[in-house]
Length: 304
Figure 1 (cartoon, one colour):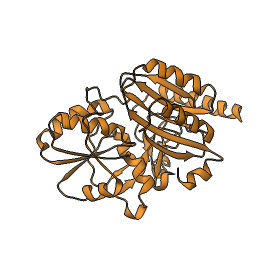
Figure 2 (figure 1 turned 120 degrees about the vertical axis):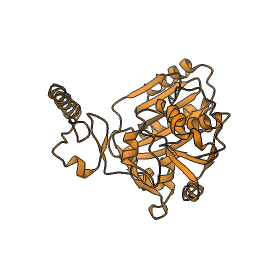
Figure 3 (figure 1 turned 30 degrees about the vertical axis):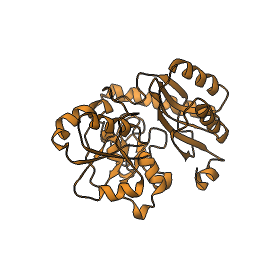
């Protein structure tokens, strides 16, 4: 963890994003062990456990994050992709530990532990994506792409990761001899997307090790090829270089990130609507959103 985060974390929340593909013999047992641990520490966020490994983002004080980290190390997760950042406010409402078939849902069987693309660090990544013979693909969802992406990246226009295999069949099948570079938030989707492409017969497949978060943490803004902010699935909405909290805010009605100018439009009502969803919900639904928002505000006041 860098010094800035360490200083900030004394008065706020340390956010740890982590994953590892690893054979888990007893996923239910691991889930129960985690459930027992989180009863004793101040932690919030989500962890997903499956027989293929673990994935998630959690937040807590320094002691809680160290405890969960050590627990996972003790259970054999010693090559985790692990990144820490900081949030001034509590980024998740509660703690969830879910048992699922996949730690990131692609819906197609792949072998990310055995068949995976070439990992590139930020410097090598910049050199690769600057070439004109590389197809650069953002494997995230459409709303994430909207908040920011790498210069020249293709938006597959997927609403969920499950749609990515269809995109590959329809749009990439004819490019198996090309260099394909892919990236995602923390790296986990690309473990599966590169495995999928190699499984489908693509020749040269690359991905950004540690994902966008690692890139923004290590790459100075004046050397960066990133444009905009990186959407994150917590209360911060987005982060930028140095893992600083960005200016985007989230529409809590539809989930889309909004730049300040969009939040200033008449279509934006906090927790109710924005320019992307105002015409997609009925007035009755909007009244329900307003009631929900008032309940959230009341609950926050009660906690103060």
